[in-house]
Amino acid sequence: MSKLVLFKKEIARIFAKIFVGENNEEKYMAVPTEWSKLMKSNTVYAPTNSRDQSLPPILVEIQHTVDFKFYLCVIEYCLQMIKEHHILPIVVVICINSTAQNVLDMEPDKNPDVPYAMQIPCSGWAKSFNLLNAGSIQPYLNKQPLDPLVAISHFFIEQKSSLESMELKDDPTIQLLFALAEDIQEYENSLLIMKQVCNQANHQFFKAKKRLMEDVKNPNCRKRTIRCLDDGIVYVNEICEKHNITLEPTDSVDSSSSSSTPICLIHAPKNENKDWAYVDAFRKHYGDKIDWEACFNIGKEIGLFNTYSNFKSTKSCYFRAKSNRK
View: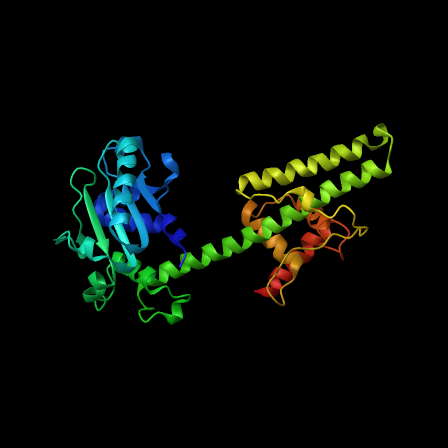
């Protein structure tokens, strides 16, 4: 399942409440985790307010295999966090596959406040190192409802693709995790569509510029059209920058093609209207009050809205179709 659920505020609250205290659960959020030497961990929760900087950051790792090499990586992460936050962090590792014997041989302790986690030695570089795996949480899976951290660990360890396939599907934390994961999957699908839209629009803009320069030899006669095409390229690049999308090289466009009809790259699910899949993606990223004219013009460039003459009629039909889909 997607580790991106860890970035959700609801999940940050769970970790903060368990490891820092109930009074501090609203003070934490996920923060960027790229440090020097190109190191990057899964998730770090840290206080959002400068007045709470005395509270420890929380490092959360979802790891396939926990061995001594990974243990050394965690030490490196924590040293970087100490440099940044000037306080020892709390470490929480959820092992989804196997824990190496050389880690188990470290004689982990038990914390009565978090009995389902093994306490791995971390003197000098972390406040605590909490390791959860299938074995450590197994005795606590019969408790209903599950402890939230047990539920989170079980969610990642089981690696199920749907709530219905989970034996403990009635647990509220399990249900929350699958709801968050579904939202993330919808966002990732929308982002994929947006990437396809931006790549095709960018290719078409460059192709149009090339054709214009070939067909209209007088620079003065093509100046205004070139400016409009350049504005379109800038607009596409602004979208990509905002959503961290990398455009394909424009030289991948077949400049020898004689076709004037762009190939639509929107891969909507079977039986779903591609026009409306594109609009859904556009609204997903820019909110309900989108620039319908811009949405329409870009869609036209990539072969959509063939049965509509302007953005107003497109907008009306979209909402009518949306109402029928409910």
